[in-house]
Image 1 (cartoon, rainbow, N blue to C red):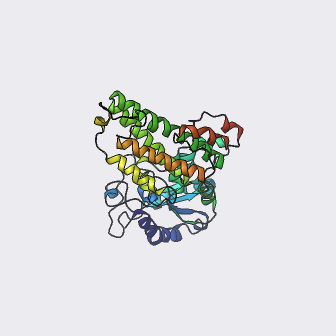
Image 2 (cartoon, rainbow, N blue to C red):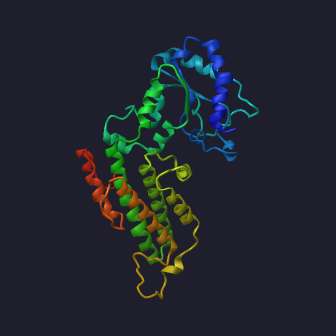
Image 3 (tube, rainbow, N blue to C red):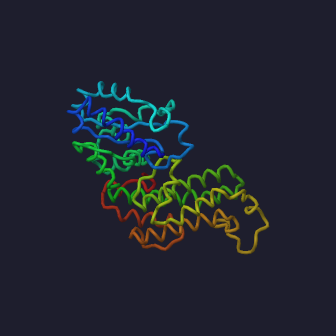
Length: 326
């Protein structure tokens, strides 16, 4: 049984009956579910996930007024619930995994992820929010929400970035993909600095994955699940396979040593299969940028598209940002 299903069953069969018995007056005003960090909130948990921060548990969210009145008593009642459920042992919590389930005040819960502006009021605030936190707070599930206060914030966040913010981030990803993959990877390999080249490749992969999320209008989760989260994308699904191929290629240092064949291009060294995959990924991205009306250029170098993308931003403050900001 996956964690989200376990949480829902535990709430419906154990948690809600406790609330009906002990807090009937509060039940119509609280929200219940499982939202936040953890693979189970993304639906990615498996047998390996069960070695830590796994087990029966759920979240209860209260307004500030109700939390002040009921918070401690409700948490005490929650702590008395049986740990083992449906044959699954009590929740095993790691040193850093505490505080993921239990009783929370709504505003305090969201502030852990996105700060005190809920949802953010300015485009600059949106620009600099950690994307994995947005993925966390919009994932999981809400089982019920009597007042709708918790869900109101969550639904605003689930509408995704304001369009100008999305475009600004896309410009930054294009610039960084060009810098790390199309430019610095090859320069590092020409110097024989394979460690720097691998760091450049790592940066390219991260930026490329982020670009695909932005083009799919989906928040990108914590790094461990970035690639897994691409598996059901409708836009650029082929990029995931090219990234996987990059991850399993062996040492390509010999492709950067003389003698070189006639017409060898040190800047786009197609003898190195990694260069070929990098260029294929960038070309796929250029095609989608054109489809979404974010560039008119056909240039193979993503850097050339950044200025085209920046022109699409309407907000004056975002327009003035450095191309790599965000």
